[in-house]
Image (tube, rainbow, N blue to C red):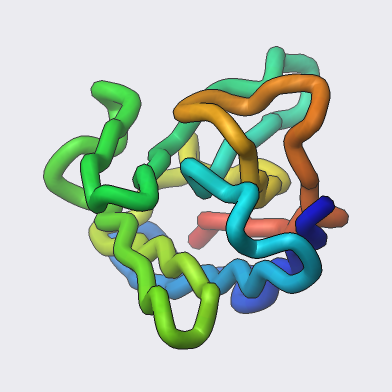
Length: 119
């Protein structure tokens, strides 16, 4: 089974940028998709963006045009470039690696990284 480790969270002012990284290790060949969910206080966890092994991407509507997911296959790493950040983007961001195009019970999850957008 794959394991994932996130990095890159932090605090930024509205309109600022951050880049999150998620490195996968272990059984890499079993990964069909990687991506990010986020959970804000008092809210349900929601999909932010995902990318399949073939390179197809999916975004939730509220981040389209501001956040970009990409991957470096050689490094088994996925990136989330976050631009024009808004206070409502504040959440803990969790990376996943799944053998399907969406997380399943066999998905690996990271420990989460905090993103805070505040003036």
